[in-house]
Length: 137
Image (cartoon, helix red, strand yellow):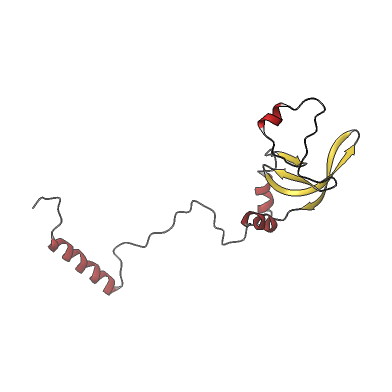
């Protein structure tokens, strides 16, 4: 038998030693402790801790899109578009516009004009639970 192989006698001795340790209730080594790498979520954060964490992300830019509507057309019809062409959208006049942040619907609103610039007045904010319901549909 080669030196790197374990014999049945070695296995039997190891199992007997383990049984002895288990019977005495003493472990050969102390139980492993989890590494303290990540913060514990079990304890509530210290006062002001959440605001300090939010301050770290407040300067991150996001893409906001206001969507009037959508449509599908063929490439043939797309190539025929010219100045003054009208493209029919699936949204009806007066319907709320969708406001998306990084492609996720977060609100709906209506178009307003302020000082010759278009804007949107938010009329409905989508809650996280509503967003989850829409995803599950």
